[in-house]
Length: 240
Image (cartoon, rainbow, N blue to C red; front, top):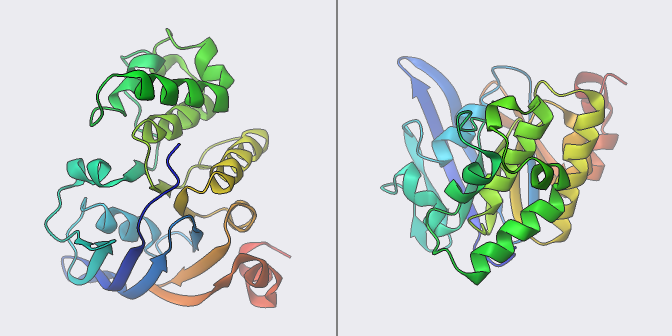
């Protein structure tokens, strides 16, 4: 995997749907190799923030930069060429293609050479079940296996930064543990991550820094360990 990269800098990001303001004045930075979580209730603006960063929904205002590159006019399809990997909400695998072909599609911006074959081997090492099912149609996989496939597909591009949208959604507690362990391994490998999650416990375990989004605005931010100990966070997001 490729742990090098540039900082993602978001300044005063705003997203509107018609007359409804979904995200307001959101600013944060993800440094190279840093893992940042974004938690909040349903409707807080988490997915809108991530989709705006990827250029999948219009940004009403604000700037997004990756290193020295302004992403204002970069289409979503070209983000991967800049070193940004995206794991969408709901996995979005190609159900009619095999596991291996799904993974190879993740490397569309790379040449098929020894380095790409090595990355495929690394993904299979990270997710042995995908190696076992490489010839099976992706639509026949379980929800957890499809989530592994979606993460592996993004890793095939050797991203410096991963944007993950609700990777634990719809998974059993056992599979949530598997996804948490995977994110911790990616963090240890030095891949920068922005993790959008409703599962605050998973987020605190997988990230070094966390942002709490409420009503489209950042209400709190700080080291994940400190926020996890915050009485208000424990009450609202951990049920403690």
